Image (cartoon, rainbow, N blue to C red):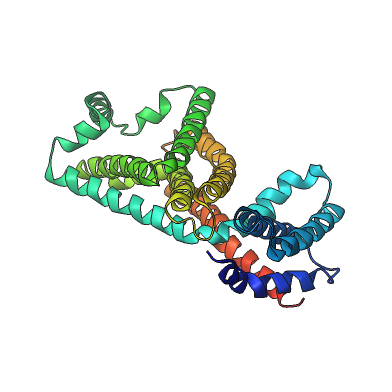
Amino acid sequence: MREAAFVRQNKDKWIKYENSLQNVVISPEEISKVYVELSDDLSYSKSHYAQSNTTTYLNGITSQFHQKLYRSKKESGNRFISFYTKEFPLQFYKYQKQLLLSFLIFALFCLVGAYSSATDSAFVRSILGDAYVNMTLENIENGDPMAVYKEMVELDMFLGITINNIKVSLLAFSLGILAGFGTVFLLMQNAVMLGSFQYFFYDKGLFWESARTIWIHGTIEISVIIIAGCAGLIVGKSILFPGTYSRLKSFTMGVKNGLKVVISTIPFFIIAGFLEGFVTRITEMPDWLAISIISLSLAAILGYYVFYPHYLHQKSINESGSY
């Protein structure tokens, strides 16, 4: 990009940020956000117009925000809480499209899995394996279709499921390096398996019993796999569409931002593991309790990853308008 076009594209933003330096009520979160954006612009300017006035100007204003940031920065003891309550949700607003795309991919292949199972009697066994299908059929005959969730010791199941889910999340993120196609493939695998799994129980007349049991932990578990898929798509987009940045710089930013998404999912995977290890096995619980757990889980996911980022974004706009 020519320097004049770069300046023209960003001039209004830089002037707005420079004027905001005179405002003493800028929140630390807003300062941090502006500092990151200016640092990215400065990096680009240094790479393409190293000796220009644009680089000198950006270096000066970025330095001022750096000083303001570290004067107003709170002690590191609050860093963990700040990341989960403000920094990450505000940043995640930018990735709602990738989240929606990840969801649509997953939903599509869930339907593919269910349809394939309905039209080919051997498909379920090819996806879930003969051992699992035979075991489940035996459990159905014994009058306890969900007995598989009672076989392991609670703590062992909790730890095993949690660690496995985190591995899947990291894999979905890491496969984004294949321009996002690796992430799509992993989402497809898990979605087809879920669709086949649910149709299997539907075919046996046990759809409701399976759904009310499985989705106690599955609401968070599946949702967070989709969110991890979003992280992989962020990486993929950074490779395919670098925008005004060099491809390497864009990729580096994509990896950092995608990793933040993965880190945000860890508490939810721990909750999902706890539910699967200790709660799902209580198959005799009343419907109202199972529905309540599922509803609260869905509300937590939508609230944190959809509604709360929108709220913080709108709040940020309102505060910016007061500068």
